[in-house]
Image (tube, one colour):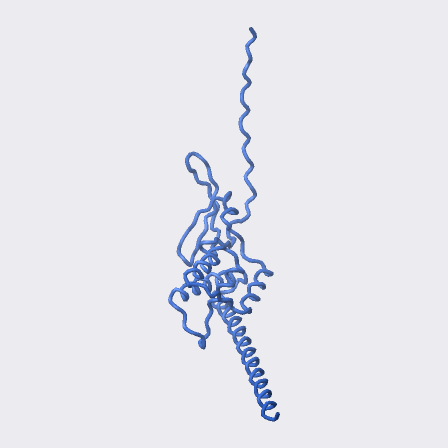
Length: 209
């Protein structure tokens, strides 16, 4: 009876390492922490496996994070917003604040989700919606905390994009918000004045009849 000869199994091919999206010195945005800087790319051994990781420094928070290069995309780590997205974000700041008439706890969760989404436009929406002028009612402590977190994240990214300092980025954002609120207030005042004049005209016509 003929015996079958076993053929030796072919060794598994090594996967080619994916092309790295970021390099040392690049600024990135990590959803849960905001803007960071890639300070190195290292290889670590985890359970007999070699894993390539980005070493990311969040200088503002005095924190270092190691993210496997293979998981950077799935963790929604991204590069800085481009000029078009930056322009859209400032257009968002100029828009009318949208405050939902729901319980604060639910709105707070939505704001928190937007802040940690890593999406620059959603972040600008939180800054716009929670911004208060001196004439507006004072914010609660939790509102103020969320606003300051969102504003800080936006300031850091704008500064990194424009290669400016944080003070300049802060001034640019606050000036945009202030001008938008002033225009909205002037528009509302003009509308109220027009309505008042219309009411007076109606009253005069009724009196003359």
